[in-house]
Amino acid sequence: MNLPLLLIVDDEKNTREALKKLLSSEFEVYIAAGIEEAQCYIQQQLFQVILTDLRLGSNTSGLDIVQLAISKNIHCIIMTAFGDVETAVMAMKNGAFDFVTKPLNFQKLKITLKQAISNKTNTSIPNNNMSHFQSESKVIFDENSCFKRTLEDAIKIADNNANVLLFGETGTGKEVLVRTIHRASRRKDRPLVAVHCASLSSTLLESELFGHEKGAFTGAMVRHVGRFEAAHTGTLFLDEIGEIDGNIQVKLLRFLETKTFERVGGSESLKVDIRIISATNKNLLQMTRNGIFREDLYYRLNVIELKIPPLRERREDIPLLFRYYIDFFCHENMVSRGLTILPQTIEKLKRYAWPGNIRELRNICESIVALLPKDQSEITVQDLGEKFL
Image 1 (cartoon, rainbow, N blue to C red):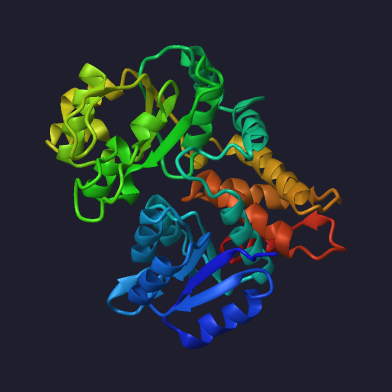
Image 2 (image 1 turned 135 degrees about the vertical axis):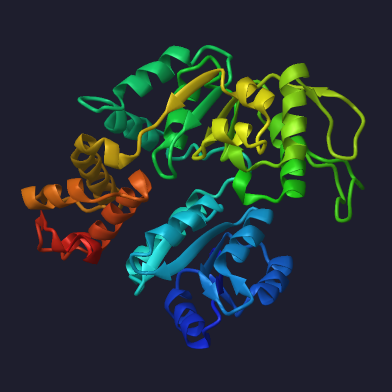
């Protein structure tokens, strides 16, 4: 049986050698000291996932490896210092699949690597966990959640073809809301295609969105079908829309006005039927006033506006979300025991600022389930980790 291919990038020789030894039984492991060596390996092998340290000496960082991975459609996982949530969130914003904190928990690391492999996709948002996302939508939005109105508005506008602009911090659940809108619409059986605009340079993003013709630029050996064509009759999700530059803004505006576009290096006008949902964590209106984002494009994208509050502003949702993710990871890891969440644990969770929002909470729940002793039936404050003590 062929093992999945894993590339480990770390400038510390002892670390990368130790990781290779620990993971070789479940992965075919290659190791690289930096980006140049990583590039050489990527040209020779089709890796399913890359694991990289955030700090790679003075000339390179793990974020450079993330960019390299994205350009090759490989999921990338960042290793970073324990509790460094800000850096981890930045890595996720730049396109990393997930992050793991040091000192590493190898059971959790293996789980994260396997999730990256199982969720690997080419153009569409993965569907293999769709039932999970349906449940997640309910737990985030239902009951007494202050987010209930957002869901009701999303369902109300789902069958409308008007463009939607979502505002919310990183990790607040924008992708879940996009799925909810798509699956409640008449386009539900058609493609849902996502583009993370912040993770690609302007040149790569143009080609990724609109496609390119053979010979359009150096390295364009074949015609490439872009995300617009891939999303035909379905929904196109443009995440971090505030990161696109002026050239892409003009091309996107032209498409919204004419419903046509050309591939890079091509002259044929192509027409597609798509519904665009965009998302941002930036103040786009202020960006239009500052001349950074086109005002005409802003209003074209923002026909329907939905705001997603950060987790710190909906603390009543925290116990429900925490319970849901604990149960989810117990089920995923075939842990049958019921775990009691102590009242003081809930209190600590509700007092925390949650800079990484739902994504951070989910990560903590996954770590707890992985690390909790088999004979322990209660989740205590100590199980939450150092930042809660």
